[in-house]
Each structure stands twice: as structure tokens, then as C-alpha cells.
Image (tube, rainbow, N blue to C red; front, side, top):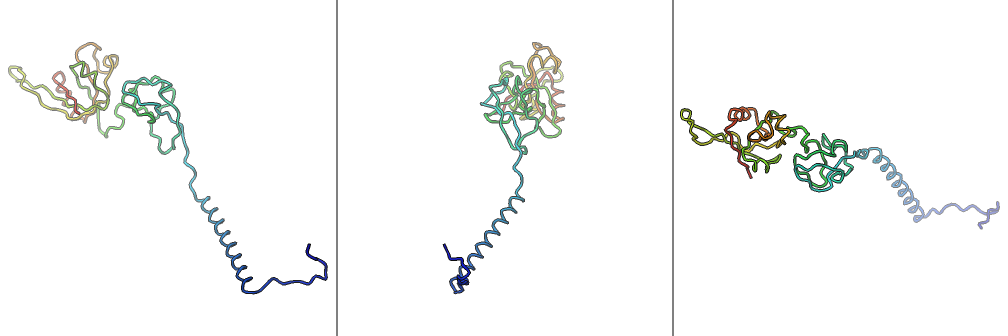
Length: 224
């Protein structure tokens, strides 16, 4: 142990060039540490808060149009609040819902994907829904939301009534919904087994007027 008696002579710190260099280095390291600590505090105070996450329902597997959602078809996932679309489904509205369009595994489920969702969701402003008759039952059964159709109207001689050909009155219109028999009766005013079925398509008002004028004379073709 060092002798701490009063007789111990006081030794001043070394004052040579090496000692002064060491003191300067120590002061510099101390200053650098204080600056780094202050910078860390500033960054922490200015950093934005972590984005909030909200629960959503996503598909557990690829699902086709017409699928009836069950508990095994969906799971809860967390998504950043700013990335969640409008109209997300909740368990009460998801279970038993019928898909109006295909859904990929992991896709967030919204009301626009179901047959009970908004009919014109995502369509341009001013778009209206119009009914188009589809005579061929096989063709009608193959249609689904998202399919594009051309609509032709049969023409005839105004005097004899003989068929003279057809004119295209709508090009590339999008199928919105293929109503079931019950929907045909309530929405389109026809019994399920009365004449040709109809599908609902998205068109502009002028095209809707042409489709209405050609009712009973239309033929549809499917675009690739």
C-alpha cells in the first residue's frame, strides 16, 4: 500500500511531452463520447414512432370464384395500418361469404371480393351496371366477374324483318356479377327459368342506353 503518512512527499503529475499528449488524447476521447451520446439521444427523440399494426383476414390458400369462405380458408394476420385497404372483412362477414373473384393465398380479404360487396367497387367514376342477356346456358355458366365481353346486336330489315347481320354495340365490357337464379328473379325481374339469363356488366351511360335499346337482340362473345 502507498505510504500516506504526512511525511510522504507530494509528487506532481508528469509534465513531459508524452504526458501532455496522453492528456490531450483522453480529453478528445471524452469529448467524442459525449458527442456520440448526445447524437444518440437526438436521433431517438426525432425518430418516428413504430407504425401501428392492425389485424386483417387473409386467405390461407388460392380460392376460386364462387368459393364459400369457411374458417379454414382465412387466418388473421397483422398489417401496417397505412397499407390496409378499405372494406376489410371481419370474421362475422367473412364466414359464409361467396367470392365474386379469385383470391390468392395471403391476400387481404375485402368486401369487393365477395358477391355482397359494392357492385361497382374500383370502377371509373360515372360507370353504371347494366344487364346483358346471354342465350347460351353453357356460355353463361363459364362467365365470372372480371371476364371481358363484346356485345353485338342483331340487325334486321325494317320492312321484312329478315335478319341482315349484327353490329357491335359494346367492346371489352367487364362482367361484374353473374346472378344466381334467386338474384335473377329479384334483381332482373325474371323468373329463374324464364328465357335467357343475364349478367351484369360495367359500362358508361351511353353504352347502357344502347344495350337497353337492343334488349332481346343481343349476342355476346368472350374476349381472351
